[in-house]
Length: 116
Image (cartoon, rainbow, N blue to C red; front, side):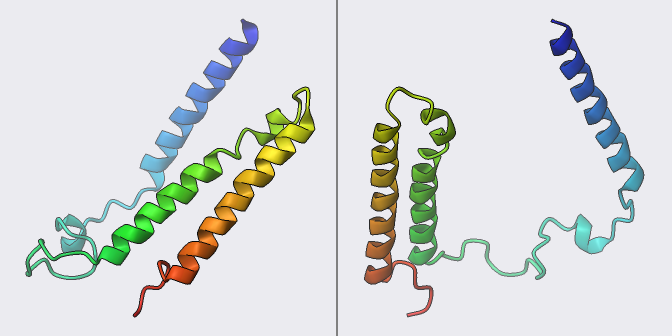
């Protein structure tokens, strides 16, 4: 119980210190560009409904798929403590092999090319 109170008080103290430091060091000089609704470097004069390229969505979906597959590898340090580390090694090798084959397939199909 004593450790929980220590960690909680340390977290609250660190959070408050970082918030105060942020208010102290922040630059409070707003200009017209920072106050505009678009901070992307160009004037918002055109239509906001310009279509995106399908390649953008393809790369975004590929990123999500590979990112979720990598999340399967995160518990590996704890999985090595199981009864059979060989099973862990086999499953890890299978996941990495599937990721590599998927990347090679997307590469050969041209899914990672931006320019045609």
